[in-house]
Amino acid sequence: MSNIKTAFQNGKAFIPFITCGDPDLETTAKVIRAAVENGADLIELGIPFSDPTAEGPVIQGANIRALAGGITTDKIFDFVAEIRKDVKIPMVFMTYANVVFSYDAERFMARCCETGIGGIILPDLPFEEKDEFYAIAKQYGVDIISLIAPTSANRIAMIAKEADGFIYIVSSLGVTGTRSEITTNIDEIVKVVRENTSVPCAVGFGISTPEQAKEMAAASDGAIVGSAIIKLLEKYGKDAAPYVGEFVKSMKDAIREA
Image 1 (cartoon, helix red, strand yellow):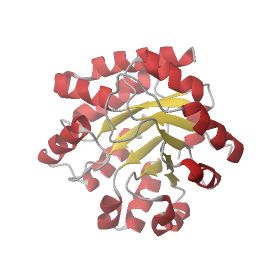
Image 2 (cartoon, rainbow, N blue to C red):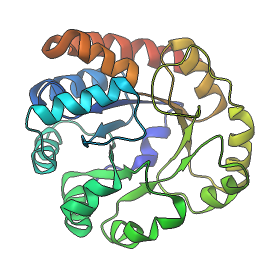
Image 3 (cartoon, rainbow, N blue to C red):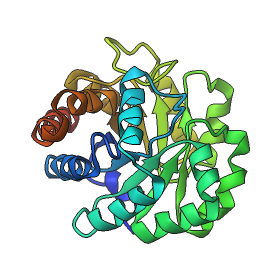
């Protein structure tokens, strides 16, 4: 299994988010490969859920399209096993606690281990309740990726101390989606994180331009981009891969200067 930390070993990391099965798994495979070829350091794969509470309208739309196309968690695991034959960079899942719970947490983590999924991001799992999955995840070598939001304030140090894999810093309040500007004081959050852990941290939510990616990567160890990529999938559908590749390249080039 590829170790998440390797994504951060060659400078700042660029992490694209891709919803599995939007519009179909064949396209997802092409988009993942295009992202890897153009410099992605870690791929965040979304497992669609019917009620994705952290998502804005763009990623909600991707969830709806994927589910309407008949995507299931089992199909996604089989898909990852297949794509792992040539995609070697770290990959993590982003989904909701209910998806893991209804699949059976132990079975879910075992399959993550089998298919080389190094971590899982559960935005609706409060830090205080992560023990429900933590021991099982640990047993199978899967990192539960902690999120730190602008509202985490006095909890940042506590979350950082127990973090695994990497820390996902949420740049803005509210749901995912592109933002014209990011006003959160990322430097302050990162400072507290650095004082409490050596685990790398990347910033996501709202990043849509190379300038924003460069700014966020300069303040942290990398940038995560979702909605801007999903918009390309929505626009170009099955032909989206080259456009996503081009976009990833522009973001990675900007981050290299950070």
